[in-house]
Image 1: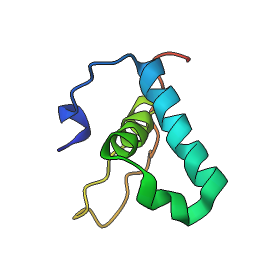
Image 2: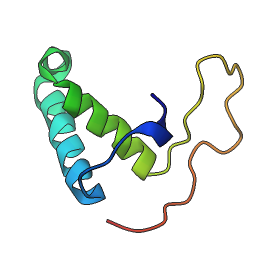
Image 3: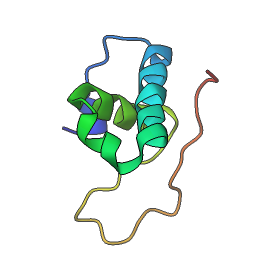
Image 4: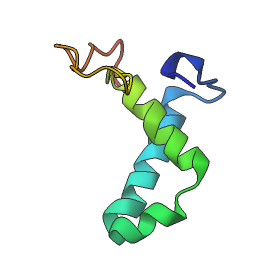
Length: 76
């Protein structure tokens, strides 16, 4: 599944809040928290990176693009 294929049935803000909560679990409990994250938590963290402008780099692409982050279209 690519970043463009992720179906979004929630607002960007809802996804960012969910991703922030997942990050909070990791911040609070360290590596141990990684095993308690749900697939939805991980998906929300990935979607948050897309929302915030991170460019997806295919695993087969050896050289990263010159620009890793694109301009955001809006503030949250």
